[in-house]
Image (cartoon, rainbow, N blue to C red; front, side, top):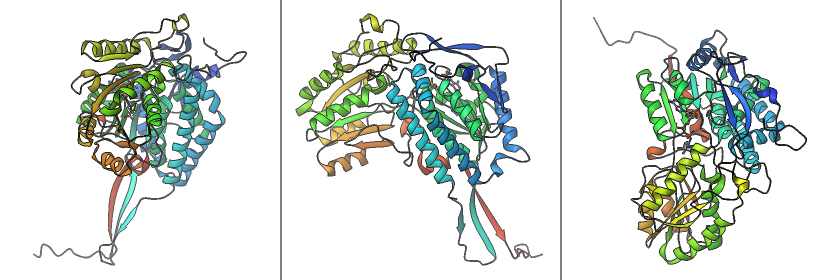
Length: 506
Ligand code: NDP
């Protein structure tokens, strides 16, 4: 077992003794299955945890259904009770911030600094929904008849299955949990089999904060094994999924016969457009940060540099020079600026994309092969990689590599920059850098992406919606829309002076 703190434990090992949480009980898998959780920085086993099978997954959904339908259900608690629980969870996350950061870093490979930022973001999301949930969105409609009361109330959508990916395990699941709790839904949490540890810790905190039995349930297990038991399930009212396009569309298909609502947050292939009048140094810094942070394993990573021809050569040289200076290493080492890829399998996938880029005729500027220094031998590291002279039809330009790979295309006019920026099946995020505020606004409005940063990159706030156009998804998380996703609007029309309707007269 890995215990990465000199002279101390990285986390309380009792946390992971039994890790399925169903109907208020911590338990193992019905078939006794387990899985080793691997630290991608050195290949060591961080924890051995229970791994659910389909029977456990169905039991978790059934528990959430009972908790929603019960005589004294969660949904009839007051909004004040529910937002108080969200605030308590935020307090507990702050209390255990360092332990959770270590867990997240050992599990995902990201640096401790990034893990701490993730936890602070997660706290802000719980606090935001606690504030939003305290204010009713119900409406009274004026129908100009004193005998009629017409109002729209918002009720919880029901049993939710919340499925998260491995790149931001805690962050992505909390974007779902916080609004679902506030809305009064019950839920089953399904983290990625690769990175489940921070979600297990969070489940402990939710129990400590007072989330009642059955309201939140947790299953760990391979999506390919338990996924259909969770999603092809008539007891489920809503599935909120963050992950890849192939998995997302499979889920939408199996959920369709049940008419379960399906919210999809999928991938991205995000353009970073740089005009010649932008602040050069700031633009180079933002492009390098935007694509190489977390070794490119970010759905909104700025993997596609679209740069004005007149500065392109100088820009690529500067970005390459910066990229080569990035210190990658074990995320627990405070001198590391970015960590390894999440697994050996994922590194194989990234390497295959590098080979593809070369075979398609792109010019490899830097990176492009595994590090040879023996200190990286046991981890799944891959260096920042830049391809110049790319064209829009290349697969390396169009497909999500989810690794530290930047492709470079050039433009000469604003219209061309916009056309290239929109030439994608995805539409998650984009950025434009320019010294001309008018152009910044024009380009931002013209880009068909869910988030556009002007002279900035990668920032978000819990109060603003996040989601994608096109194949990047069909829902919105965060902001008021993120809460609406977990609510059904119901119109109640009350006639206070009932009389015969007078339609049929005989
Ligand atoms: P996957 O689609 O492989 O997996 C996502 C989640 O789905 C995991 O928990 C996985 O479980 C689960 N899963 C797999 N198969 C099924 C199934 N048949 N039924 C139900 N659940 C299943 O994506 P990755 O984990 O590889 O994540 C990377 C992807 O996520 C990228 O495309 C990235 O862009 C996207 N993403 C999008 C974000 C956004 O905000 N739009 C944010 C972050 C990531 P398991 O891992 O156990 O197999």
